[in-house]
Image 1 (tube, rainbow, N blue to C red):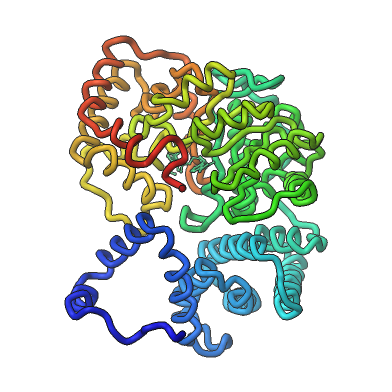
Image 2 (cartoon, rainbow, N blue to C red):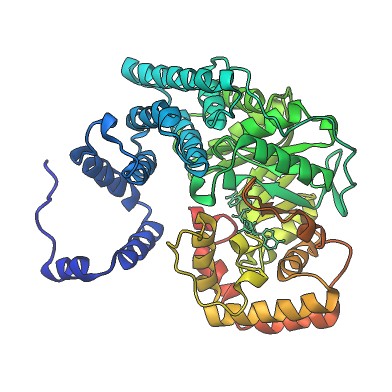
Amino acid sequence: MAPKLAHVNMMTDTVVANLPPEALRSIIRSLLASQPGFTIAFEENTRAYLQSTSIGGLSQISRESLGAAQTRIRCMLGCGLCYESLPVLGSLVENAKAMDYEGEFLQSIDADIVQAATAVQKSLPRSTDEKTMLNTFYDTLTTCHNQYSPINQDFPFERGLMAIANLLGRPTPTLQTKTFTSDITLDLPPAETFQLGSRQLPRLFSGLWQLSSPAWGAASISKILQQFTQYTQNGFTAFDMADHYGDAEIIFGRFRSSYLHRKTLFAATKFCVFQPMTITSDVVQANVAERCRRLQVDQIDLLQFHWQSYEDSQYINALKYLEQDDRVGMLGLCNFDTEHMQRVIDSGVTIYSNQVQFSLIDSRPVVKMGAVCEKHNVKLLTYGTLCGGFLAEKWLGKAEPRLYDSDITPSQRKYYTMILSWGNWVLFQELLETLYSIGRKHNVSISNVATRWVLDFAYVGAVIVGARMGVSEHVDENRASFGWSMDKADQEAIEVVLKRSRRLEMFEVMGDCGGEYR
Ligand SMILES: NC(=O)c1ccc[n+]([C@@H]2O[C@H](COP(=O)([O-])OP(=O)(O)OC[C@H]3O[C@@H](n4cnc5c(N)ncnc54)[C@H](OP(=O)(O)O)[C@@H]3O)[C@@H](O)[C@H]2O)c1
């Protein structure tokens, strides 16, 4: 049956016609968050819109229309037109040398290519046409690489080429990363550690979700590798990544393979099952093999397993297959609630960690999860602890963010909603003021106090702090989360604010850990 396209209620039509674009964005976002079932229709309609509107021939992408071409590519990637985006990306790559684009623009296109590779990876080529499109795009990238190498100019699409070559199993031309050398001095010991299995690890991991999209900003591979070096030299040797975090695994693998003290490094990656699937030993082994290939390792230090639908109990089988696989060093969970983590433990599978959101704003783990972790020696690896950077001096005394301003990240859009579930912006400002006073007393920052608060729960192994590699870094500031402790007065001052929040209702409304995804 043809979809009804013509009619919307008169009053709704008036609202759509009169709301400013920013308000429409905010409403669409709320609709999609509260009614995940709408996502399919949203994507279908976006695809139909993009396919029915044209940007003209590819040769017509002028300097003036570059921005429009790029936003269109991003929409294509977001709604499942990843193969269709390749010729447009290819056209930008082909013209890059001749048109002498700005360095920043080139870096952002490189990151778009990485995102295209991630999107393609999720829906591997179904037809000969799609395979051809992918191979043609690889050829375009290598041709462009050949234009840059003789003149000894940095090839701007290094991340993109690595990601596409990795996807196709095709060779990556020798790439140069001038600023990165493996000849570095020994790392500083981590300031505070915890035991995970046989490993002694820093209590702060660096999170690489921020590499999954140019929406966090984009950097060249040499800058990213430089930052990896800086982190590890300061004792931050553990990194959190996932099968769907763009090229995070590939870049980490590249860094690791040329790093002198690679035994000190620790990679926590993920195997995420978001869609219904049949679990077999082959499917599980193929995912593990892919992680090993991308990370350039024979054994994954920690593999964290995410399973979307608890109604389907195959997650226990998947975990059993993973446990039997020698290539999985330690097995962890990701966004499991207490009940299902307990079921996994009861099934006899040994798990070392569970990755969950935990912060002053979202303290759901204290309700049930913490006690079960303590009983079974499962360590929490926590994210969202800095609310995407909102728990920082930068936001003290500031008005509410405009969510679609260019300096607001996807992470902040997510955690702003959390702040509103927890309380409101006024109460959040009171929390920031309280943390600021505590910080001044101990000569540390708001972010350090927020991190310390989470670290002080014994069942927390490490806080994962998101790192915009090559774009922003907080190495020294984050070292200041260690080596001091909060006193009773500090704890009480924080509690005075938290008591006025809706922290307990959050557990009721969102459910236990990971409930916000389900
Ligand atoms: N399993 C899951 O479902 C899930 C979900 C989300 C995240 N994660 C993991 O957790 C990681 C954490 O990411 P997140 O999104 O939750 O972000 P987050 O760690 O709460 O915030 C990261 C941001 O905080 C700011 N920041 C870091 N250190 C700071 C300091 N010392 N002082 C001031 N600001 C500081 C930086 O902002 P600026 O760059 O703007 O300076 C950084 O980008 C991810 O990378 C990922 O590995 C997992």
